[in-house]
Length: 444
Image (cartoon, rainbow, N blue to C red):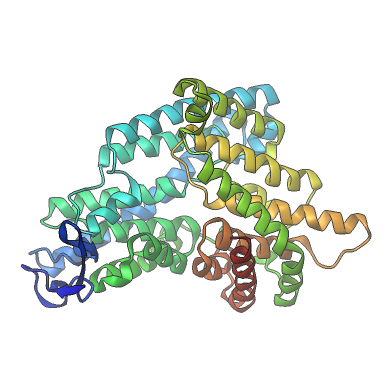
């Protein structure tokens, strides 16, 4: 292994994360890792870079806000309610099933076509490739198509997350703006992604950790600066300008002791639920049915779309990304809600994503983990044991979901406290995440 200085760059940006690591293969030396794109220093005044950064952050945060509000507005026009769960409850089950099934089929077609047309140029993966120095750039048109597919499925109450669309929107805009002004666009793309994530989930620290997991921004001083600043600025812009607020109500915050007790109940079932969804997503890729049953892609897509629509029609609390249903666990919780989150969300999300819908799995994973944990609490109630309130169980289960279902223990430690707007929960959440991580490793 050798360390070399990247030519043509100046100052600390002239080092690829201080160095570029080259490893020998049978074809000679090849670049193995580094942060080429993130460290690229464009020849423009720093004032211009600051101005571009402000524009990207404002766009990403506003886009995250508009994406959600526009979907809520359309749902209100259709059903009279802005929330997918409330809308699903107000509409006839047959109509819900038909709407979700149809939207999943169209969104899956958009997702598959986008993937085939702009292969390797979509989402965080494209930015990561560019940051490594590969000749790939995130496609604005391809991202726009995928975002449209996600938004359509979101409006139609499909059981998917929306974080990928929000992150991709900020990343594509930042990348395009950076390239048009003499840079590679990677650092501005990272800033846009971080700002969008922070604005959507009121979670600036989690946004930084999310980007580090996908882009290894810690290898680049410039990339780290843009990511951290983007997350903070996106959060501030969202809260001060767009009236953003924590995803879950702060008035329902539980005591540390209650969450510790809730974790004892939630740990094993939440790990089970999160692992089930993770395994399902990994094993049932978009071509799984086509390969396994030798059917045509359209037949596989239609089958999965029907399953996705049927799961929401049968379990109405499984509609949407899961946030609305999780909020209700701060109040009165029914066993029907627990079943919907555990079974309906597990089946609906797996089917929708496997069909090719360009959606996310963050909040659905939280929902499935919480659903299994709530079922365990109802089992205890059936034998006369009421150890703690169910909101405390929900908070503990969400942390387990992020740590296990997304394989992101560090992000889980800060993201759940940020979601509920209470950083004082970090110590007890750290203990919950550590226990979940150890149990998950034992399962592996």
